[in-house]
Image (cartoon, rainbow, N blue to C red; front, side, top):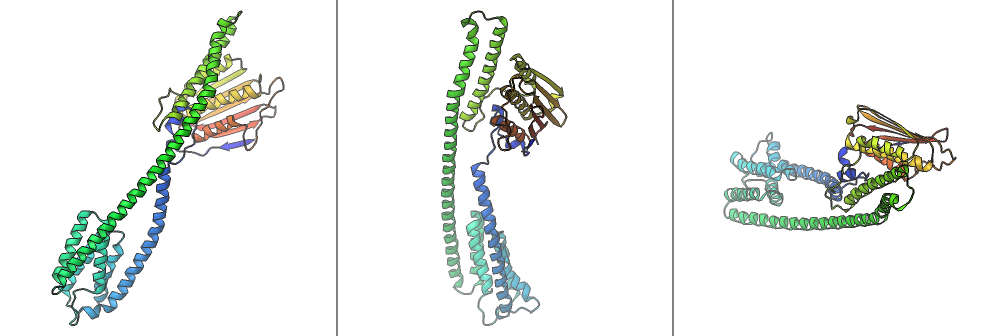
Length: 423
């Protein structure tokens, strides 16, 4: 006995157009989503290295600012670690929040000269570490922050240096800081333009891939129409015209021809729905409602009228089953009956469908052919061919389980357990 368990999928993983067409199509991730996810992973890896580098540089700056603070300012030893921290630690925010880091560094640069006097032989109001941190944070703000924030940081830094630095150095610092901001803005716009170009190239590649897939779908639709639809149309036409072309057609034979014609038309309608999905350009195709639990009786009655030795039992409240589960139940029963008629002609077929509040149970078994013919085979790889593979995929699509095995008397059995509503 072979058990095939379907992996539970979210309802959103099954495309609506494929479900409406009655065809189980494997859900593939969108190409742009795959690219975005891989890019996020790469950025996360690079971000870890950047964070380590920033923390390391901050500690180095602090280790320089603290021991040299007594050379630049008159600060008592117990307070020196805190003043040095105001000079160096804002650098740690350069990647996480550059505007906040600049604000902390600029405010501390405004307060420190007012509270602590500079050393007699030192001409600047701040340590070199503090000046470097302010400039680097201003550059980071220019590269990453909105333009309004860049303007505030630029004007604030220029006024700070112009007002606190001695003599004509203030004008020089103002020109230098303005040049730094302009240079960073140019780099920023250059990087943004290159990113936009790369994004457009990526979108173009995705569009080319999408067009290739659509062309392949259109080719499959053409082949399906030319081969299957044409022959099915011929079957319907022959069945409809046979009573008028042949002599001696009894009412029973006429009924048989009508049943063949109805079955052929139903198949053609489903093929048209599938063709609509294949030819659609990403939009839901206009398809007729697909069969479900309400059409089970019609399926079973029609199969019995076709001459199959079929018995069935359908119990429980059908309204508990969702549309996707109902479609899977219908297709599994339909394929099981077809396989039984093809591989064990003349063998009795029994169908049992039980609708519960949480699940739906389907059991179809057939006796061996009275003529001794039973060419159905089951292997661990093919599970009986494309028909049973398709039933397995339908059960998997709604989060159910499918079991197939040969019985001791030579017959065959298909059992399926499906959730009434897919998770």
